[in-house]
Length: 305
Ligand SMILES: NCc1[nH]cc(CCC(=O)O)c1CC(=O)O
Image 1 (tube, rainbow, N blue to C red):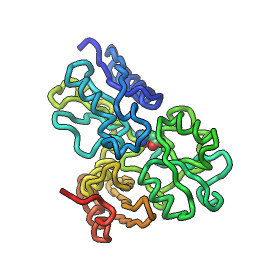
Image 2: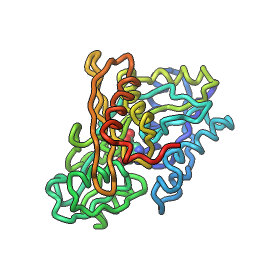
Image 3: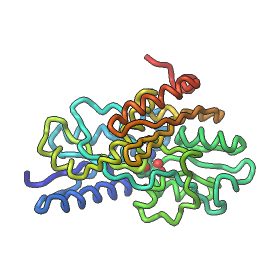
Image 4: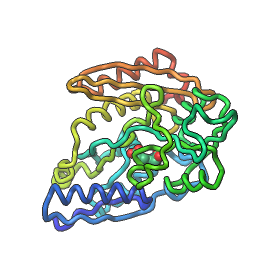
């Protein structure tokens, strides 16, 4: 191969993540040429409607997958939390990079944390998962939609449209905006999206040469954790239509997983925690999903079938 071509979305965060992968691949394979193929996706273009209404997270992948099928790119870089639980047939994730900060960030120009917001304050987030957790902690808050890339969302906060917003710490750190974080929202009180903070490389599953180049960046510890989180989400039929949150930690051989399913409208939620073996993260994910369903999570999930 002469040059490895990475398909990427054009948002500043996507470009940062793809550059990060390109740099790491060049370091892992001296002499390898790597270039980015930036492209726009429907998820980036339709900003006036909630993601759930226009087809969900897969929208951020589709155009990049088409480019790989057409031979215009060899692989694509994604935030793993935006990757659907079941990949399109014919694709694989040969590398999951070491997870950065997993936590959500509370961001405000006037308030330090959720607890110090005044009664009835306006908080911006379009994430059902974040809305459900905010409602549970503070039923008085007014939650308003907030879409667009990270810089757009910060600009809307600065324009005074919101008293506070919630974003992922990882994205802020990557864009050099870590100083905007007023407080980190931490496990177990607040759970992130499954796989938040992890970057994945996707490629065609019929191209072992490319998969093996990418696999040099795989981080086994992170893969174990996010497999537990994604197996839980899969067992719940989670998607961006459902407020599902989860975070797994690995300490030696001991894997643990916190899970939550909630209701964005009224903040009701169920939570589960369990521990399992590092060599079977999917079993732990299913175990926590069963615990959530036993407690009535089904009520918050869309009808099956
Ligand atoms: N939903 C968009 C998205 N996808 C990944 C990140 C941040 C980086 C990450 O979580 O890996 C963000 C922004 C955010 O949620 O604030």
